[in-house]
Length: 247
Image 1 (cartoon, rainbow, N blue to C red):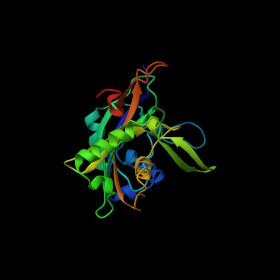
Image 2: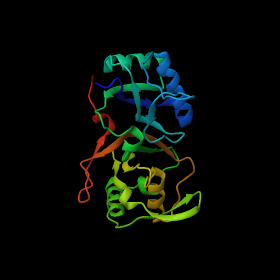
Image 3: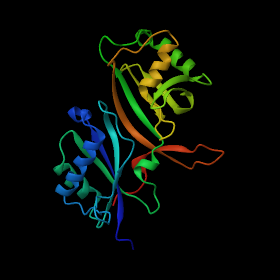
């Protein structure tokens, strides 16, 4: 039996921590794992470091209810014990919500990311006119938007602007009447990732509108892996904590 076990840790990142960058979150967890006395495995060589990987890094200024970290450990206790130890060593704005034991051969968190789901709210006074209309009109406009075969958008990159098609990376896009917010599930893979603000900018451009600066409050609700994919079938999206088991 292997003396190494891979755990998938799901955590929330809210409040003021949303303004902390990804590298600082990584450093925080390195210290948190030591304080929690988790039996973390280290690489070999002259500069050993903890064996851990994170799923899609979260942009600064976004909160999240579904972030993931994979960590290799040398011994197993229980899921509840790991959660309790990490939360005791953490801060209130970073809360560990689950710990799963991954099966052998499972892809790591970063390589497994296929999509992410977001909740998008508008700050007062910065709501685009389309979302001030009757709910029926909003739903009709979103349905028409998603019915398009392509949604061209110009991305700014290191090599300059390039036009991409957002449509294939939008898996769902809906308006919540009661809460007056949007939800969207978007491609979050390394090659074809789509951002919530890009989708909204493309929608508003059709109406000759622009998205106001600092208009959005975005919360990432969860991150998804893809299973049962083949050349003929794109497969299914599942939350990344559905891979593995409680131990």
